[in-house]
Length: 397
Ligand SMILES: NC(=O)c1ccc[n+]([C@@H]2O[C@H](COP(=O)([O-])OP(=O)(O)OC[C@H]3O[C@@H](n4cnc5c(N)ncnc54)[C@H](OP(=O)(O)O)[C@@H]3O)[C@@H](O)[C@H]2O)c1
Image (cartoon, rainbow, N blue to C red; front, side):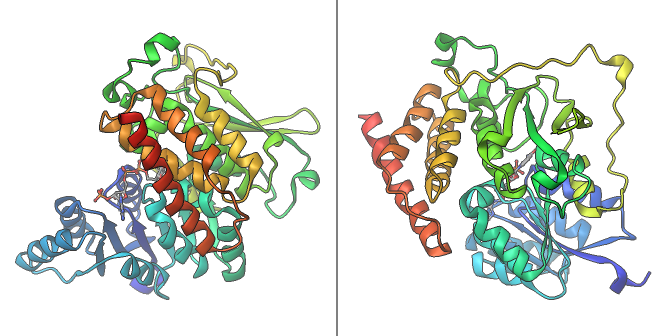
């Protein structure tokens, strides 16, 4: 095999749920892809196992002590993989000329700089890290347009929308798009009463009915903040206004989103709730490759149901709408406060209902500025975290 004809892939966050699903797809196509770089935060054992199987040129750990552990393991195994650590190494590796495809699968704001580095260096960016887009929206799209990077929406809903639009060079009006119907399962607490929500445990909130995902996005799904972040993400990816998007709760997670056109047509993308489908699509588009996902069996389906989201029981969705309407650094503040609140809920420092309260308090006290450049965005993120921690301390006394 001529290895120079293979597409070289760098995976930011390879040990997570999206990272593992990506490697599962890539392993099915050794004739198309080779792994150039794998990365993790602290999971040295998991990264070692991935290095053994995929033999990347580089393995980058965020954490220095974990990087040292990985060095020892790879040395004992006579591996050629070079270990680096820290954000600068990650950004350099992902921007290198010999990388064709960058998979942005780090969770949270921690993925911002490396996702921006991938977008600034002309890669095909398999974009799962929604928080980076929520924070840096137009800046990320501008960097991609300047560098010629191809941003492939990989969140299942945005990948579905992408698949339902025939010509991506047209704007909404030219394409005849009336509305985006952004679907979501409603999460594990969809039917809980306000009383039941007040005593929900992290274990209950982590139990997503349809999808298997990392802890942060699982809690975001339970609060509906995930849908809120996705609305903001959709506005940026498809140049839409908030009013162009309708959120629809669809508990079966069979339809991953829809596009409604001027002539009355509604196009939907359907599939099993398995991220290997959007990942395979984003990797190969405009081609289609095998993903390992079984097709749907329509005769086994009991029915498809839809309902409007309840913004009273799930205020995080309302907060995301408000942040997007405010604009500037408001989505960055929303995201930062949410990351602090989710951590606090997972550590059992705040209750499920206090989680939204903490975000709302942070948003109402934060200074919002135009998101003109990366420095402004990073400062807004830092200040919002400090403010959210102060609010959290007040809740704890
Ligand atoms: N999971 C899904 O089905 C899904 C669907 C749509 C979109 N997304 C989005 O995709 C992203 C990843 O989600 P996930 O569920 O795959 O998360 P996850 O399972 O928690 O994995 C996160 C990955 O990021 C790494 N990481 C965490 N903190 C880091 C840091 N400070 N610096 C560098 N790397 C860091 C982790 O390394 P360690 O293993 O060392 O912690 C891991 O490799 C999120 O933005 C999420 O919203 C996920």
